[in-house]
Amino acid sequence: MTTSHPTTPNDLEAYWMPFSSNRAFKKAPRMISRAKEMHYFTPEGRPIIDAVAGLWCCNAGHQRDEIVSAIQAQAAELDFSPPFQFAHPKAFQLATRIAALAPGDLDHVFFTNSGSEAVDTALKIALAFHNIRGEGARQRLIGRERGYHGVGFGGSSVGGMVSNRNLVGGLLNGVDHLPTTYDRSKQAFTRGEPAWGAHLADELERIVALHDASTIAAVIVEPMAGSTGVLPPPKGYLERLRANSDKHCVLLIFDEVICGYGRLGFAFAAERYGVIPDMITFAKGVTSGAVPMGGVLVRSGIHDTFMRGPEHMIELFHGYTYSAHPLACAAGLAALDLYAHEDLFARARGLEEKFGDAFQALADLPNVLDIRTIGLVAAIDLAPIEGSPGLRGYRAMEHAFHETGMMLRVAGDTLVATPPLVISEAQIGEIADKFAQVVKAVA
Ligand SMILES: Cc1ncc(COP(=O)(O)O)c(C=O)c1O
Image (cartoon, rainbow, N blue to C red; front, side):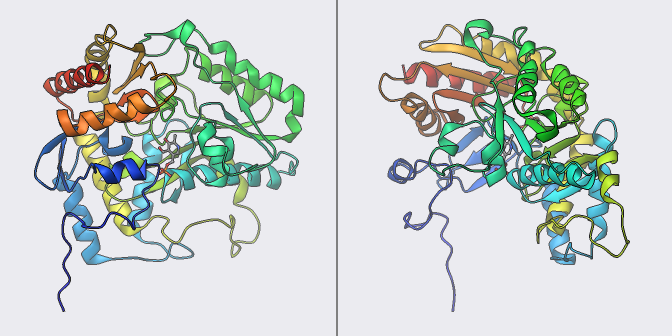
């Protein structure tokens, strides 16, 4: 019997798309069937320039031969080996390479399959760490308003996006939130880190005063909040958060699922800011999006705290069937090789100014309320259509795809660009021009 797999499915009903407006999509699908470097291609062969690295993940560009062959070779050699009590060599190689990229003594890597799992893993490690040290009362987790930490119950609880929280009830108990660092009246049209807002890190003191440090396990923030529309950290904010969390023995977790692997011009944002957190969560760019993978980088002191007791005992009762999957490890090693050989993190750093110029030049277009640029990231806040928040943004995404041949990302009425780090200077101009066309079209 032969089975056919048409490129264009003829029934769109069964697939319930994640984080998508399913009904609107199915009326006018934005279908992708192929990719190469900076471009996607529709099933009809129409090129779509990728202004968002897929979903902030394909940092080395699409279908890079080196990553494709590494995955092919791995699939032919070892499909799967159990990660509990057994391992394969590439898991160790990749962990060593990632630890070498990370600053300070963030020397140990716990692998997961996604950013959400990485966040929940980091939160559990924080709770378990305090327990082992005899401080089991430290149960409280602190996130931040407008933060996104994936969709697990832990990540949703510390996250600060109302739509991700309001339909699913109380989530975890004992969670509190720092205030967002964004205030348009103080920061509009900032390039890089805004000058206003470092003092907001002192809100941790207020939370400590309310709950007592002895009940607080960890604080988690994205160095640059991505999913709610790109909110770079105010100058000095992360340093102050580090000092405040140290003062109270509260662990500091940087969620670098978006910032990691070059987005801000460094392997990790921790390096850009010279601040070493206790854990870093990562995903996406670790394999340049080619195979699902995430993980948590953990400082030696925390890791070593677990390495006690009889040696035959499992030290942390946590893990996933597909942690350090061979295909993901092969893709990860090939992606890290590409990042190194093509010096892509430095490349992003070198392009930051040009990229910022190209997007900040759009400030006078209709409905533009703010533009934020940092690393290879830009966000344009558009005024919402009265009574229909998100509609202008949705129309912008549709127009970009169907009329200008570009994939962009929207967060409500904010349009976001986060291209692969291999983007050329000419392509920066091209996507900025297309953003301008789109903003005018939805005016
Ligand atoms: C900062 C941050 N954390 C966690 C996640 C969740 O990652 P995933 O979708 O791989 O579960 C994301 C996804 O965009 C993210 O941006």
